[in-house]
Amino acid sequence: MSRAPDGVSKLTESTYKNVMEQFNPGLRSLVTLGKNYEKSVSAMTLAGKVYFEAVSKIGENAMVSPVSRELGVVLMEIAETHRKLHNELDESFKSFHSDIIIELEKKTEMDVKYMNATFKRYQSEHKLKQDTLERSQTDLKKLRRKSQGKNLSKYTIKENEYMETISSRQTDMQKFIADGCREALLEEKRRFCFLADKHCMFSYQLSNFHGKARELLSTRLPSWQEKCSDITKVPETVETMIEGLAPTPVQSPLVEHNNRNNMESMVPPPAPPLKAQISPLANMFNPEPRSSHTSLENNSDQGSLRDDSMHRSVSQSSGLNVGRKNRVRTIFPHTSGNNDTLLSFDEGDILTVLGHEEKDGWLYGELEKTRQRGWFPSSYCRPYTGPVLSNSNLSTPVRSLSVASLQEEEEDLVLIPPPDYSDDPPPRPLVTSTPSPQNKGRESIRHGQAEANSNE
Image (cartoon, rainbow, N blue to C red; front, side, top):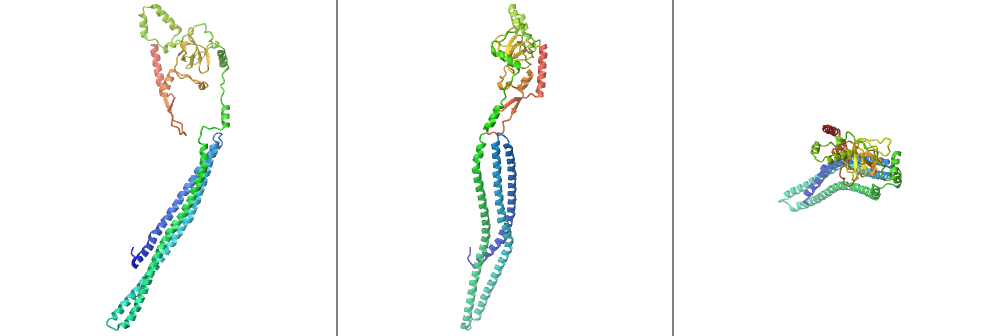
């Protein structure tokens, strides 16, 4: 940087121009942006208040729940804490508006007039001093021209006076330029310092706000997280109430009577004296292949043929291995009438065969859905290898199932989505049987074709 008076004077003028042409317009833009900043923060705090009011209302709903009362308290405390924090943020931005935005607006309007006047005053005084110095220098030059070839002693005194005047005015000019430059630089620094100081105050207020927020949240967060860490924890009063509501199975008098009789003696009652009735529709479910008739005609051992036909009459179309405990599904309904030793069931019921041998077409077993025991015709059922019903499933009614519906259950599998609100990895998708109308139609057509083939 040049230290000559002209260089310093140019620095002074550029400093004034920088304040007037860049700083003040930038300050106006800063005020506009500050107002937008206030509006956005105000909208954010308002939205936050509304949001946590909703959280508080949900907490009030949880307060009436016997199992979620503590979580309701947590939600309400969270909402109240954040409401306080948003109020603190509002107060911080109120001071931002009063200490920064309003002050900047005032300074900007006043500073435009002040800097224009100061700069014009500097220019006018600088020009006046510059003109005075130049006149003195011009007078000195004229005096020196007149003194050439004449009485030097007479002009020497005046020349010394002019030299002293010029030196004094030059000193005054340099001092004026130095003071003007110093004043211009201080004016510029004063404005930047004002702006920085105001924002330091605002930063200090925000620091206090964040300090309070951190202290407030850090002291309460552990207790909040502790209350929601174990979702399986249930209050003792609720646990007692749930245990008291556990249903006790109630059986009908007939089932109790049969179970009591069965528990008294594990030996089954005697089989009915008459042979079991063979359903005329049994051959539809297990038709004999035509090739068997040809092979039987060519069989030379007629005695074995009679034995085989007698055995088939005893256990017509049953297909059961009576040498071990089996489970069967009924294909026709059966009523016991007045005989307590017989077993009544509907089509599609599941029976457990308890006897080890078949007697005149009768089998002894237990109806799984009621645990009632008795004799039933073997031709009324077919082997079943489905899942065993648990005790929890015994209380639910078992609907009557046909062969077509069983096929539909195997074909139509609907995926069940994993449960929400869980941090555990999703389990393997479960399936539930939901027969569709299209599959029902296909199975009914397939079943009709099977019946037609068996009749042929």
